Length: 211
Image (cartoon, rainbow, N blue to C red; front, side, top):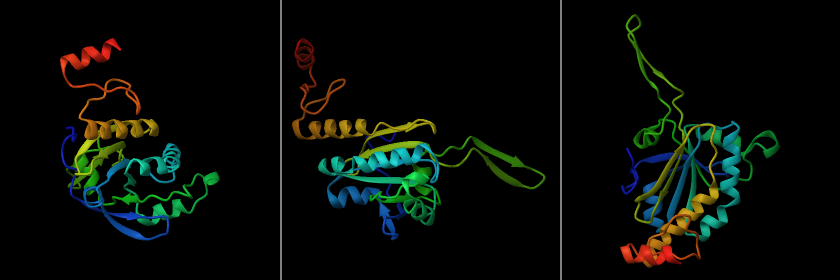
């Protein structure tokens, strides 16, 4: 079920920063108390292959997000200690050294469960041992959330494990949402900052399509 238009879950999660400090981060509070947008992106596991390419791409675009009044936060279900080990591993060894935004460590999976983004295929019951086991890896898909200054989710997307994200698209979406907030216009297909938007009326659409 989509969470777009709803408040982001009010859940506090452990996190790790590049200095090795363990933090407590509540994404909803980060948006509201700082009056900033937040991009929260989830990846499946530390010390894997597609994940560091995305994490470094978000780092390379960090100043652009900051210029757009947006906080960047990464997340997985790994522990803070594993995050810190990866943050201290060089790029040429598959690490994420040089990343400066925080990484959530949702080890109890409270937030990932609330968002419904865990790879769980179902449950199996073993009568002989009276045990319930999960099918699936119980790690997150590549889910991405854009949250506004009031804590409302205005975009969500979920990729399967092998599919890396296009960081530029999230910058475009933030520009579009900001334009809607500031101008009261809506943004048509393929809109980019600096292009014409339109009024959400029949006349507005007609005028836009004629240009």
